[in-house]
Length: 271
Image 1 (cartoon, rainbow, N blue to C red):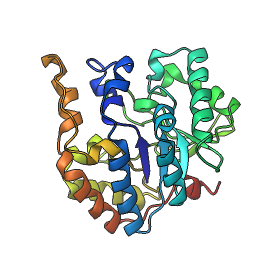
Image 2 (cartoon, one colour; image 1 turned 180 degrees about the vertical axis):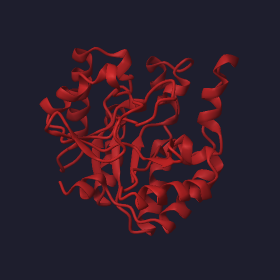
Image 3 (cartoon, rainbow, N blue to C red; image 1 turned 180 degrees about the horizontal axis):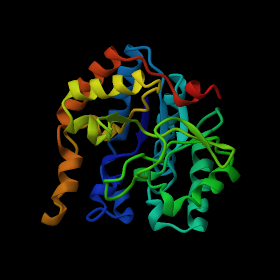
Image 4 (cartoon, rainbow, N blue to C red; image 1 turned 90 degrees about the vertical axis):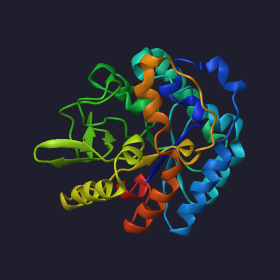
């Protein structure tokens, strides 16, 4: 179980109308929605990995401490939520180092994991892997093994956990193979778009193939009362992906935690 710790205005789907200069003007809602997740995880005796955005850690350090006090793993989601496809190796390393610095200041444990914003480690941005190793990251969970998404994905990437560059462990978000097709079932928008019975079936398919399911959510997905923003009409797919079924996420997460056993990525890897 993994949580990408960012707020409603940080997402790429809304970046056309909310710039990073606007972030400080937006209502910060991440504390309440994250505490709701913490309560659900505690009720079901479940540990998770929180991929923390450095910008968030800088503003609500007490929330990061609270997550750690609940026994969860803290990993990093970078600092600024820029897509790697928009960055150079130099700007990415600077962003990563800033994220590590501000997040480590809130906690006691070592940061071992990384997840790129919008899963944007692809064939074109594979240069990021050596930078992660250089900066002490032990595992990555960014390479989505699909080929149809407009923003991310590597069509022929491996479905199971494996080692890259001999040192870095890759923990790919889950896809199930059905009739030769890869169907993403890792959570996020897919969790809200698919009927819950389909998600449950696909996750069980991953398990039957001998793979633990790597699942993810964002705190804003449990916040149906978040502010609504207008996007250009051509961006309706992004608007749909962001807002669809927000009111059902908490109920579905409750079912998921009842039907499956989860833990942190660090524990799965034995790190």
